[in-house]
Length: 191
Length: 191
DNA sequence: TGTACATCAGTGAACGCGCGTTCACTGATGTAC
DNA sequence: TGTACATCAGTGAACGCGCGTTCACTGATGTAC
Image 1: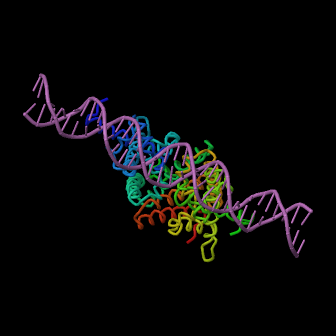
Image 2: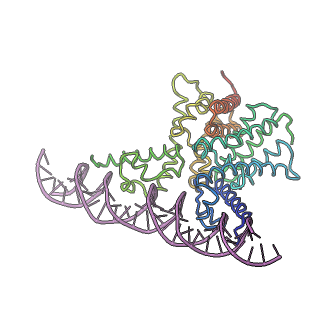
Image 3: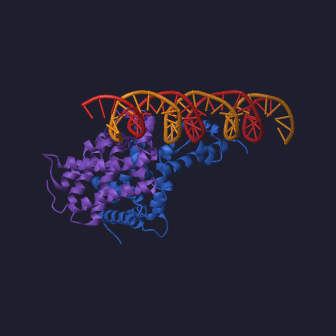
């Protein structure tokens, strides 16, 4: 077990990645220094060589979770065999797969109500990503800001609510209803 | 300071009410037995005369928060001088006042992402209230289930997202965009 | 290329703290007579 | 209506536990020569 500088960077990255996943899986407060370090096979003492405090980790992991979530959605929509453009993105965002993979999915949906009560810095970080999301939808929806806001709120709300509903069929219905409505908003609706 | 049976029931009620508000203000995990008892001017030891455990309180307080949130929205929409019907309800739900009063507002919006990762019993409790909400919107939206689902997701999403955005103007825009779009969905749109 | 040593990533014991929960106790309540 | 006593709502000290954080230490890394 070596402790080279390259390994340090790698370990820091693993801690951050694990925290970003844990945040989406269990919320900001579910992150504990001991458990995260254990998850990456290190002891808790070493943590402070990487981050100034738990709260420092949380701030960075939130940003990371938001970035990861975006990447995942884009990658899935761009996968071969998937419909392109906005309809493809909406379909993958409101898919059962996305609903059932909270720790790898959109961090906005996974953490909206948590971040709504967090400090201003955290809210600012998420708000920036919300704007990015609105911007992307706007591009696919005839450049109308109000339409894009409406679509983003409905999609984030639908994904979050679908995760609350224990009945699988009803949860599917929520995803499908919003998926159809948002796709219908696009200027050139396709099958 | 007497300890009559009537006072016991009253104290239990105060604890439950305080917990329901605290849950909406700070999330399920923010409720601590000691702090809640202190908030109602009692000592922590007496807590277990009212509830079996912290988790028992949480379950009951979640239900209470959901019921309180519904009552508040209905009351505000029915207040004198307010537009009646669905437009009035949507306006008060997506108002700045509602956004800024998290501890007294809709518990669905305040707790969606928290409850999404809670146990099945909690999710079932919130799901029941989501259905009630969908049913109410359905009534005002030409009895179309998909329309009602779409509107509820957009409204819950909009309120939650508006609380994330630190910039007051932009936050207002989100509320306004969704408010206008949902009101436009009603069969007989009014001013 | 090889040796000597300073650096520093990671270890694990220890700390103080707040938490949920328990329990022996107190004294007002409310009931039996 | 008045007295005697059992009940029980609320008190506050004590508990074990997990947490975030600190720190003296270890031993591989990587650099100076």
